[in-house]
Image (cartoon, rainbow, N blue to C red; front, side, top):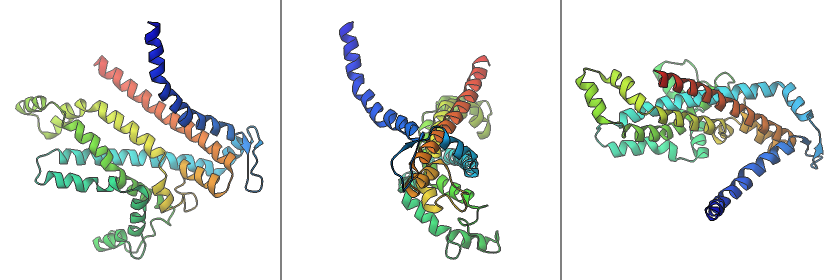
Length: 294
């Protein structure tokens, strides 16, 4: 028994050491740095207590970053999952050239984030961009729009680019789940007279409910920590209209050399993400309890 226990800890040791070095050490280091102030002229950390927390909470930019992060996260997660699910439903049908269609849909996901962002930067160009050209031809706008320079349109613009880049990821997971749905249940529902919508609501969605939960949580965490598309497209601008936590942390730390404030933003980022995940877990837990009772 004791020998088995030693073997158990021996096998776990590499994973525990790796987690300690790669996860917990940087995390505790960030918390430590958040209590110390640095600057470009004074790079040596000086203990500042809670001064950085009070300074950031009093700054209007912090509230903008929190709101932007929530809007960005929920906007991308919602649209990416809806588009990914609808695309998976389509590709799950017996279509001609199915393999080619799936490869085409996967292209945005294969592209590196920076390349995708540069592509969308060209597409959003006010004078030469494809977006303005199409909308003008369709009569939906009368004049060219500066999508990335207008603070009212910038967030929606970066969300569209991120959804285009990320929806194949959700599509892949949903497509795998749809291919594992018990076809006998669908055939039985069809014999009972259920149409496509009723079969989707009563058979397909309940069968892949757990996959939907995992997909939403994964995309929520990945989207909240997204960086490259927003940074390449807008660098958090105009006027902080698209600043989320990762871009603000990078700008504060590596653009302004205020590593203490960057670390403080990092601590707040962890707290906000923990609250979002906890809220989602509570809502999902209540839904599961109602399902069990029913």
